[in-house]
Image (cartoon, rainbow, N blue to C red; front, side, top):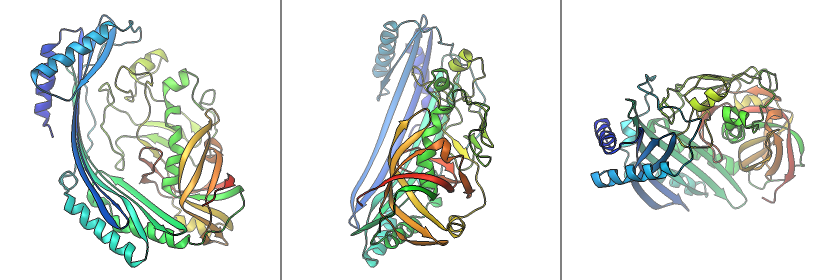
Length: 444
C-alpha cells in the first residue's frame, strides 16, 4: 500500500509535469485476497494488488482523463500528455466548473488492521469449520471468504487533497441439498464483526427447512423480506434520487417530490457517517459528503447533487458527484433506511398466511418510472401458516412496483448492514409487506 506522503509525492510530480489550466489526480491502491470453496473443499486462494493513477486535465474549457498503473517519472509524464491530448479533442463543456480548492471533511474510521493483515490461513480455518459442519449435516457448502484494503486519494492544482483508507471483509455461503438450498452473506470493514460459522449455520438451517419444497399458488401475498431481499429491491431506487436523473426526466420521483407516495413508516437518509456504512467522506471531485434526508415519513424531500447539477438546478452541492468527466452526474451511495422494533420471528408469528423470502436475484426493470421490477426468489423461500414457518416452497417470479411495496409495509425490523447480489451494501431493515405480487412459480 501507499502512504499518504507517497501519494502526495506522486500528485506533486504530476502537477510539475503538467502545464494544463487545471490538473486533478486520483490515486487508488486495492489489495484483495480471497479463499474460494466448493464441495466442502477449498479450491482457490488468490491475491492481487492493483494500482491506478488517473489524471484529469482542463484546457480551455475542455477536460479528459487518462490512467496508468505505473509511478515512474516517464509513465507519469506520459499519462499527463495523454490526458492533455484527449482534452484538446473534446468539445468545450459549458457546465464545467473550476476545480474545488481545499476542503474540510468529517471523520470516518473504516480501517482495521485485523482485516488488512488477514492471512490465507485465517480464512482457511474458518472455511474448514464451515466444511466440517456441512459434512456432519450431509450437506454441500460453497462460497467465498475475502479480505482486502483500499487506499485512495484525490488532489488538484487548486490545493485540494483528500485521502481515505478502508478495509473490507466479506463472507458468502450457499448450502446445497438434493432439492433445496440456503444462503447467507455479510460484509464489513471489520473482520471481527463477521461470524462465518453463524452465517453457515443460518444457510444450513434454511437448506434443511426447505427440503421437498411444495408449490404455492402465485398471486398477491403477505411477504416477509429478510434484509438481503429488501436490499436488492430498494437498491434499484438509488439513482432516482440524483438531481441529474430528475433533470433528465428519468426518475420515478419526477412530479412526485414533496408528495406522500410511500408509507408513513418509510424514512430514508443518505449518510456516509452512519456507523454501519462504508466509503470516503468526499465525492469524486473531493467535495465533502453531506447527510441528506431523502424521504421523510413517506414523502420524497430532497435530491443529491454534484456541483454542476446543483448549479443547473439552482440547488446546493451535496457531495455526491462522480469523478469527471461522466454522464451520470451523482447518486446517493450510503443509503440508510429507518427501521423498527419487530424481529423476523415476530413478523412470522403475526402472519396467518404468507411467504418468507431469504433473498431475490436476477432483477430487471419492467417500468422504470413506476419502478416495477421483475425477478425471482432463491435459496430459502418458505410458506408461513398460522404464525409458523410451515416448510419450503418452490421459488416465485415476482412483478412488483417498489413504490407500491414501500406503501404497503406493515412491520419493520431493526436496520442492519445488509449484503446481496444485485445492489451495493446498504443499511436496511427486514420488512413485512402486504399484497406483494408473485406472478408465477419456478421449476425449482
